[in-house]
View 1 (cartoon, rainbow, N blue to C red):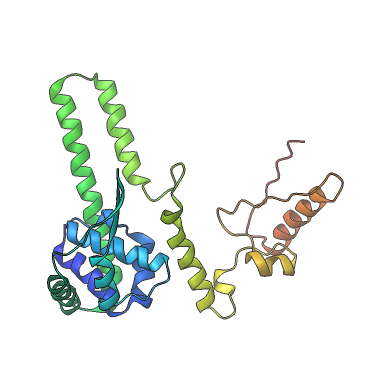
View 2 (spheres, rainbow, N blue to C red):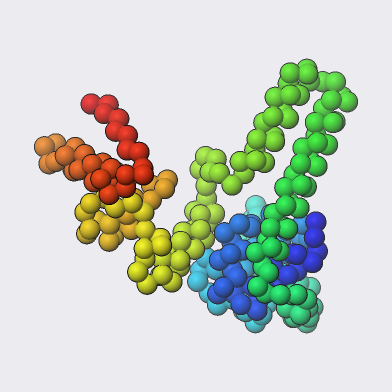
Length: 246
């Protein structure tokens, strides 16, 4: 792991949360941080960001000291720091150790790289243990190795159901980018051919699942086929495919 990179990312967020928190949450979670203290601080920051709270040394310290952690007996208070003085000292240290705020993208990359490497080390140790124990067949070991490495490679892809607090930050990032772009063109998807519809959904975007619902005979199919035709006409570089299961 890289102690400097972890401290620099947290310090950069404290120095300029508006610019750096969206960058960090887009690629990192608390689990990416090796040092438990850093993981706890980033978890607090992420919760504050999801609630649209101001993130600075005062507010982060307050939330770290009054952090609520879930357990078998419900939520209980569990402070990140032993005392307010210790917390303030460490947060100030994080801000002072940032070499350059403009390099936060590189610091984030380093944390990602080290996190992936730790995962690979864990997988290698697991495979080695299973191989030495001789409990599993060679084919089972190969399947295990392929499965675990595939999981690491595709970690950023959606796998099954995701908790709402795990995706709300990414949605907020997208909305922030839209709001920061006055004409919205940079964030718009493909034109549907219906300007009013595009105004509300910002065009047809990647991974969108749009459901057209109405009573029979109201024109759903015609409407959908019009959209398909318009996309093909306005975006000749794209391919349009229609599956009719009716």
